[in-house]
Image (cartoon, rainbow, N blue to C red; front, side, top):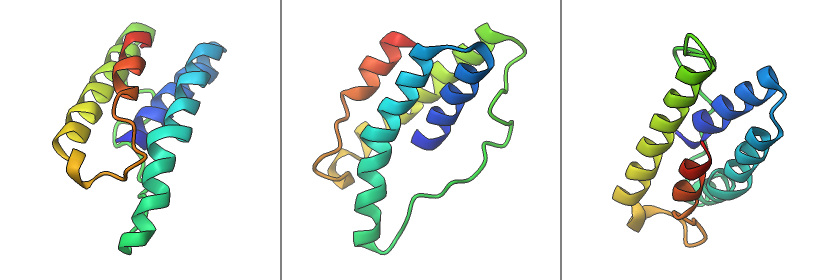
Length: 103
């Protein structure tokens, strides 16, 4: 879900030449995605890089794409909260609230 959120932000950033959205995507890359990507191999697994089934531009316009990204970030945050005891020690769950304020 972190990967998909990052990709939605990157797609939107490149379509609209939006530097703030690039920075938000980088925050996911360097934060939760990086944390998980380093932790999973210690458990014999890896981060899956599956494509998002509706694509990375799933809305009919910028506003709907933003709403979809916001909803995905909410879902990602909620899942991270549910799995908090399984996440790596350096995983900062507070990043989602900061991201949601910006999206």
